[in-house]
Length: 91
Image (cartoon, rainbow, N blue to C red):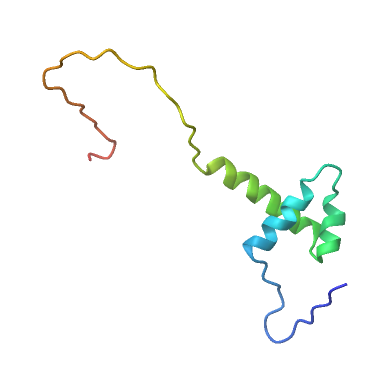
């Protein structure tokens, strides 16, 4: 059991991103209960649920790329060609 004495003006613990990720990952194991994982790590279950929601949201926002291959094209001789791109905002 770990006991942490909080003194001074700061009353809240600061959790590193690594600690948050580790705790959230623990809750995703088959059969894991969020309340048990939270209790074992000395954090409120509601905070763990918040971290899980934030992790899920950040995964949806982050761009992801998948490799792809296009079939080879037949080469033909082209005269000059260009692509015109017009972006919103007048760029």
